[in-house]
Image (cartoon, rainbow, N blue to C red):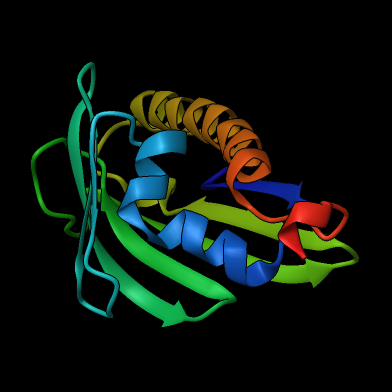
Length: 154
């Protein structure tokens, strides 16, 4: 297996979810708890920081607001992504009833410059990170996104 795929439903508009995944102040709440930086443009830099893991750098590949956001992501802390030491993370957002279906795919684990067992361990760590992060994203969205059924939002 060379990729991770996670899909969640968030009861918020596509535009609101887009803000949650592309603005550093939100990403720091639900994913990169010790710091996030995002230069939101193709070729722009992205950094996610965790005290226990270090800072992981990325380079933005694609931006198609508000439906597609992707970046190359370093598999090594404090280094820029490069062939053999990067994965590709792609977020896809789609309207779904009264909310947004968010799909995240991280791919390229089989191209990492490490043995199969290390690739498997890296993939499992990333899978665990996305599981926790996306759960936290749903919780964050519930606290910051206006809801259609909330009279105060109208």
